[in-house]
Length: 78
Image (cartoon, rainbow, N blue to C red; front, side, top):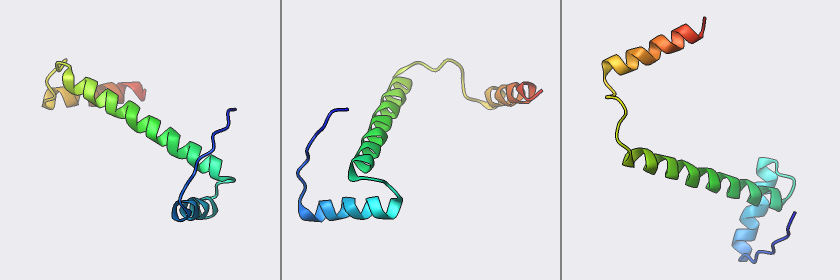
């Protein structure tokens, strides 16, 4: 694992330390890694949403469409 040093103003360092204590993280590094993972997830989701918005709809999302989804779920349950 690589090491990265980050400089924070005292108020931000206190906030991080407080979050580590309140939320059960072992270290400030663990807390920061979790924040980075969440940001990566958000960026990935944003990309998927933008790609979906830019694509042509495959089928109209009407009553028949949702009923067919319900049927598929019912059939998958056995």
